[in-house]
Length: 61
Image (cartoon, one colour):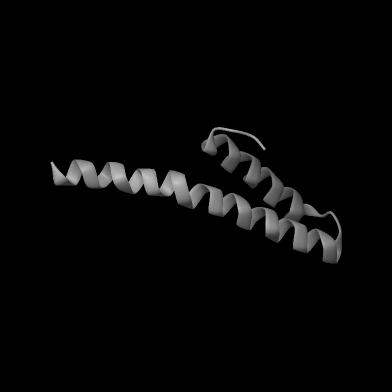
């Protein structure tokens, strides 16, 4: 029983804390790189990854 609750709690923590934090970090990294070097393949890759994270998150901003 404890194992079942522990898995659910861990998944909730990942979705409630980890995914929004990852979204924020990807946005910050993309903005910083874009400010220094302009739009390039790295920033486009970060933006597409951030879009995928937002889909996992379940809502768009």
